[in-house]
Amino acid sequence: MKRGKVLIVDDEINITELIAVNLEEEFDVIICYNGLEAVDIASKEIPDIILLDIMLPGIDGFEVCRKIRNNKSTSEIPIIMLTVKREEKDKVQGLKLGADDYITKPFSINELLARIDAVLRRVASKSHIDENRNNDIIQIGDIEIDNNKYEVKKKGIIIELTLREFKLLQTLIKHKGQLVSREVLLKEVWGYNNAGDSRTLDVHIRKLRKKLEDNDKFPQYIETVRGLGYMIKG
Image (cartoon, rainbow, N blue to C red):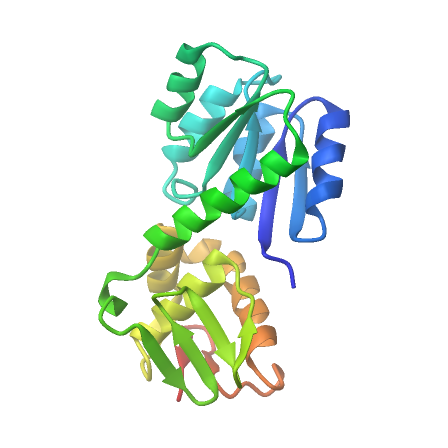
């Protein structure tokens, strides 16, 4: 089961291909070679993490980072900057703009994988829904949600969810038994309120059903209220 989606932004084809080959078993990989395109792709795909070079055509990585952080729909996406720039001022600038980590080239794949894991763990620990802090474990049917460990089990077996999928499940559980509109889900999970952007929400719901339901064609837990939104039963 894939852990999520990663966007690699670098104009050096050999580097992007090397990274992609080493990540594609664990992540869905998107590759981009241009700064302006990276901003557009990030807002459409909402990846779980971005690996961002600084020296790019179009606009540089610093400006890409600034635009992503200033967009409500992408502001919380973790970013690791990859660059040949070794001066402290460049690292400080990247971190001040909102990068979560900074790796100088050349780097080993093992170091990159370790940095990705560390960043995703930090993001997961910060993304807990406040209302569930005192409800560490929630049971719905044969599904167990551990908000402390950020873990979901079905019949005692761990189900691998991406960060977005887990946050989506948490939001539905918070409103258990109630209709949750598309607008509310987009605002609480993605940080923006625009029903016209609901395609991403529908894709995440389908993926969540495939992982949680015995038969996603006849869902037991996540119900669609056509034209309005979703609700979780149990």
